[in-house]
Image 1 (tube, rainbow, N blue to C red):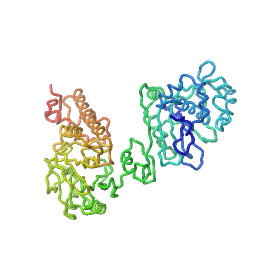
Image 2 (cartoon, rainbow, N blue to C red):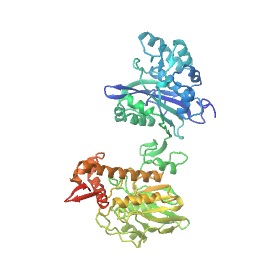
Image 3 (cartoon, one colour):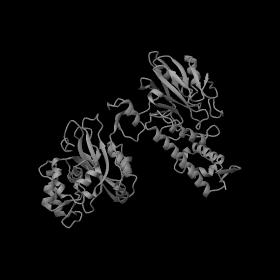
Image 4 (cartoon, rainbow, N blue to C red):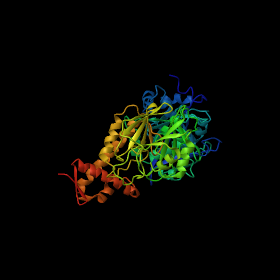
Length: 561
């Protein structure tokens, strides 16, 4: 393995760096030290950041001055073969250079405390270290200090996206500020500083320039009220630190980093595998997105709390014949129909509906009239909340394999639950499942009896786990989703957890109505969403009744004896 410092300043790859997140318990709870970078005409200029910077070859000489942690243990924690301690030393050095805080032990083994004399004698070393005139090892020798690297807990690992001209491979640490030291920015690299609660910093992001790693770190810190809890979590044995390499996506305000927990993450990796930054990280209604040679997506302009960014319509096919099928024409909207026709590279011959809720199939009538396409799907068992005009030319039962142009084959899966007539379509050649509302992004599916059936929904989800050849989910609302098994298992676990809350509520509130159970079972959901949640609650109660676990009389529910 190469020396990790050999590429510290290389233009061929990310430069090794270390950052330390300094925290303290303040009057408002946990507070963090942020400093503002000087204006230097680059991407980081003027940003509010944590102390940190590049590793220096001289940092290795300070290993002998480190207390409580050797290179073998440090390397194991960071997942490197050797020289992991360099990152800890660099974090301590950069923190002293930029903020004046020095994580070191005095001759008695106590954390270093500053009096006026010591602070005055240490001050010139900050600039000397920054300019490379002296080393941290020199400082420790001159003052009889040892570096308190064991006070640093490994927090996170970030690498700058490939598209950026300057790239950094940065290890983030977190540590409590030394109690008897005062932070003071250096006036060179950092021109201002503040102690701030993470939530307050995030609330002021319009005026505080926060880079993506800083913002996400603040969000993480905001989950903890006190320093002790944060450090216990960060230093917990076995805690795994995942590498984060943001992807760059186009947004309405220009390119921006996208991290793994964001909706567009997986799709960006598929549409822009080389990281050019030319794929969008926002859903734009009416704009065609080429997902592959076989697939195009157009999103209807019907975004809402129920439909997310809007209903997705997919074009599938192409090939030499240049003929196309439409999956889910969308809501009744002539503008959307025009967008579908404009996006289709050739004639539309087939229409497939996943189900007939009013945001998925009503455009079928106009699209069929404009194209003559044959309509495939099912009619719902119950007509409430359905597109009553939907009349398929071909009724699908599930199990059909339909050949389309472009060497494309759709396999039909009957997936009742959200709706009795719900179908998913698997594009076999691309291992992509068009899920309609069976699986959605950023939201759980509403199950609305009588056409919605919670037991059927869970059964359909479990059946998908047995399906082979699914690698991507193309939902009716949102971006492409990867790791389908993880997604499906997560939805099942969520539904079972909600069912357990229903049972728990019935234990404490027997003979309660659904309206009375609602705020208990959905106490983690905004009250403005409770009218929709009530539908799924009724579906859970109906499932428990049919299974003999609950009973209902005159609208009041209790567990069965």
